[in-house]
Image 1 (cartoon, rainbow over the protein chains, first blue to last red):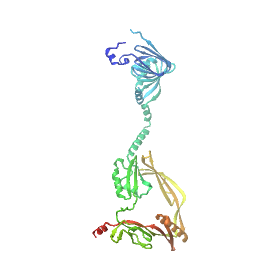
Image 2 (cartoon, rainbow over the protein chains, first blue to last red):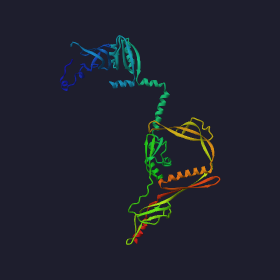
Image 3 (cartoon, helix red, strand yellow):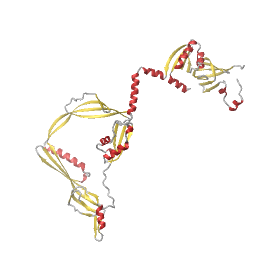
Image 4 (spheres, rainbow over the protein chains, first blue to last red):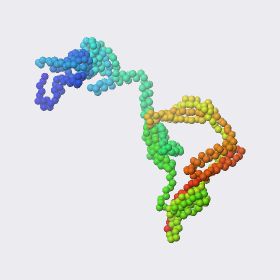
Length: 91
Length: 403
């Protein structure tokens, strides 16, 4: 992960815009939007694990739907029970 | 995103199921090769439902083949499929377009003329005058010059006080206010005489202002001066005044009528036949033989115009033609019957003319018999106010001043 330089700090640009850092937004308990993802590792009805550039996000729940997918964001709906994060050791 | 999905609907998309072991890889390859897929739903086991645009479908199939996945189409959605369905029904689509265009073009024309006279008064031949002035059915709306037409109608008729034309949809509403025949109002400062409106016998005369020229019992003719607008004083000499007064007289209303003793009448037998026809502007389509099965008949036509909304008339109308069978009946009246019919008819006619029914003094009927007909004459005697103010001509004034 690269460090913020001075200009970026001064302009207060959100981090997910200029770097590959993922942003997870959970609206209510039934909707999750994940920006800056890399790919899907596993997807089942009750479990989804999505890889990002700094680790893996595991989502547990029921009736999980990948409602909208584009190149850099994904929207998951369904009854979400837990969100886990697996960090990748920084090299 | 939703705009993109909506765009996909316009371009068309398919709902497919992918079956295989490497479904996650399939999703990843799709997203990296910029294929938009949405509404992914995993079923128990190895199935995945998803939506995909039709232009990306073949690329997705190739990916699925590489991953040894089975692809099945569940549903086809979007406009291209909808249009494809109608490609086989060309005539239907063409007819739909033709109807739409015909509707649009016909809505630019006037197809109905409605005449509304204020207070439900009757104006004779107003429709003809409107047509002669240039407002006809089948004219284009923007070619109608409303001002010019109203001016022309106003010129051709003098019993209209106001006329307005409203174009609403394909309906032209002509609103007319009938002019009231108001008596000429004479200013109080003007000098005037009181003249007889009708001829009759004077019963009472009261001159409030002016000189009475007639006495009760005198017979007067129509137009005769009853109260003159002059006053004669000892010192002032003759001077003109605005005469006022009441003049009551017995007025006779008389009418005669010849009633033939033999009369041929057509009586309805009760049989009728109904026929229908469709009129498109001036073109008729009949649904029947033109000849009626009856020998003598009355024909009543009812026309109903098609309209979509309250003011959007179409140039199509349905005509209902009803023929009533008639029978010739010759009737012989006795003299008594004929006189009764005659007097009743005349009484009704006269009573319609008399404004004040209470002032009727008496009525009189005379019968004149001949072998072929009976001549009935009815006379009503009515007390009426016959005085009417009439302005004295200016010339009198000037001569007076000169003297």
